[in-house]
Amino acid sequence: MKFHINKNYFLYFVMIVFVFLASSAMSLSTTTPYLSKKPTLTFLPKEFPANPILRNGSSFPVVSAQGAMVVDLGTGISLYEKNPDAKLLPASTTKIITALVALDVYSLDQILTVPKGAGVDGQKMGLYSGEQMRVKDLLYGLLVYSANDAAMTLAGSYPGGYDAFIDAMNIKARDLSMENSKFTNPVGLDGDSQRSTAKDMVRASEVAMRNPEFAKIVGTKSITLTDATGKIKYNLGNVNELLGEVPGVLGVKTGWTENARENLITYVERDNHKIMIAILGSQDRFGETKELIDWTFSNYEWQKVRISMPVADGKR
Image (tube, rainbow, N blue to C red; front, side, top):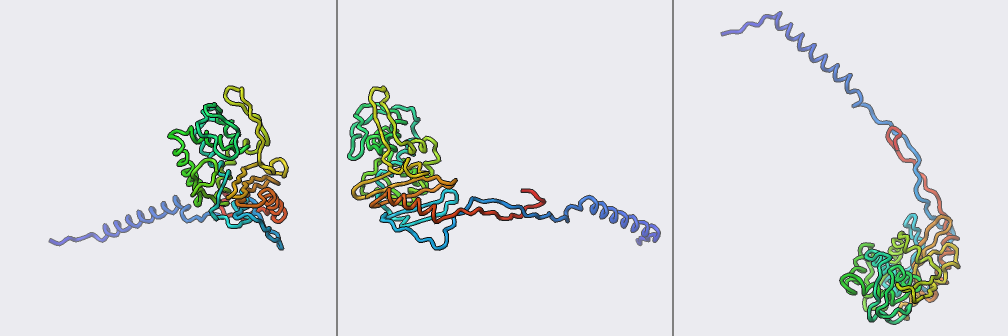
């Protein structure tokens, strides 16, 4: 059977299809013109923290410290280094980590009992076994007077005991990316493997100074404390000779043993700039720290950084 198609009907069908396709194309072109529109890029200025720039012709100081580091905390830029990764004896700068662990686990008003054996060698408040002390007052003894018996009380009262406290110190060190540090006691005695570095101590102290209570304590020149009963008084003076003497010095911690020599971590605020200095194994920690402070602010200038950044359609 053959099919015969009327030419008139065929032409009529073709015209209908053409009209349909044409109208569909026109509809798409009028409803989606934005697809081909390109975003307008504009450039707006963006300010970044001022960068420390070493002045031309500056010479670097020579210090006796076995490890030293100066860091601009606003940018994280190292301003001075001498063996910053050398593993050295931290002495009582260890107590920065001791304090951070204590602040993690205890409340400031919590009362602890001084354990037997707290009176180890070195600097002490004179606490006696069985005496009750507030954690806040033990932290003042630890960080202002560098009291070893305060450190031993905080460690010995830790949940799980003394050894668990030491474990917590090393966990804290790892959490702070202190890659070359290990602690075997909370005091800073020269243990077989107790080590840290100038870089690690800068890192720990930077984090510690963010804690308002810690910053307040290490910035205290002198204080009178009592035991929990209020009957026994302790008059403590800060062993940091630069505190209150050198403009801008606000802490952090001293350290000394015969083998470690002199250590000092120092936080400085001056002209809206924040600097952390670590000195380990020095023959003159206070003199060399003051020299580094003076050198830093005399030889660096902070320049504002402003860069034009592209943004779409003027949006920041």
